Amino acid sequence: HATIMQHNYEKNIQQKVNYLSFGSYAKIFASVALCALFFLLMYGYGITAIKRQCMTALEKIRFKSNEFIHSQKSGRLNYDVLATKLNKSGASYYFKNKLTPLTFIAAKALFAMFGIITGFILSNSMQLTFLIKMITGILFGVLLFLVPDLYLKTKNSHDNQAMQEDIIEMNNIIILQAEAGTYITQILIDAYLSVKNNRLKSALLELTGNIKNSGNIKESLEIFQQSFDNEDLANMAVALSQGAETGDSVHMLEDIKKHATIMQHNYEKNIQQKV
Image (cartoon, rainbow, N blue to C red; front, side, top):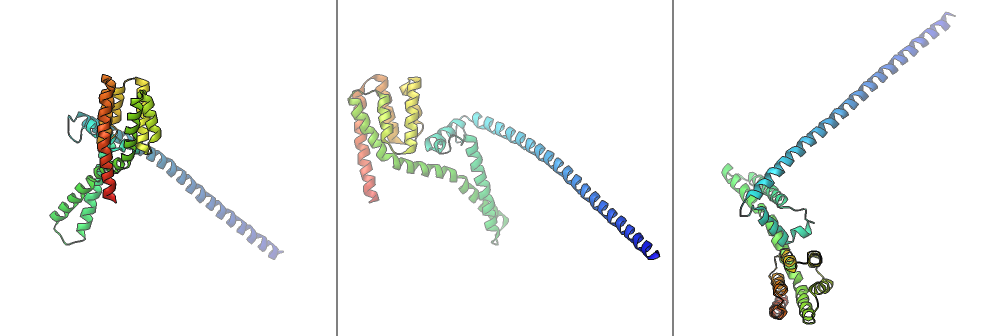
């Protein structure tokens, strides 16, 4: 009987130990869970507060920067000058009007910072004086600062070459349709259907819509002209605008025919050079 009692006693002790151990684990788990919950709540609140502060700071910087470039009367930092440049180079078309003068300047500044850091790191691997390293970094920064401008200029040059054949076809359509007495909106619709370049098609569609909505052909053609840095399209738009303003379609056709002949000659010359 004493042996049985001893066995039961030890069994009860073991059960108490197990119970206490389970309770300790439960307490530890509960404490960890509460700490984790507290941390997540504080972290979420902190991140939200930081985001709010960052957004406020960025909004202030954006407002001040916009105020600065709008206050510039002339030069490369003037808002209107930059907006015209982005529009003419095709940046507004390719970036869906999301690339504003402010974001363009910010992009150039980031490129410059990256160039300075890259130049300094590359020169740091060589045994040069600190002054030479700084000069190298600044040179890299200036070069990368110009990269966005060079990209837009190159992209626009490629677009102008790609549009040559379409512009020649447009001139031919304008000459034929104008001689037949067709109204300008129908001429532009036919030109839109004939061209292949997407950027030119988009601008022609916008031009037709502007003429129909406003009824002001001259103003609509000026907006169209500002969408390209292309001498051929500019001459065509000027001729159409003058013809619409004065009603002198004969003089307009003479100008377009003369320019179409020059364009055809230049186009054939470019093809020959490529060959």
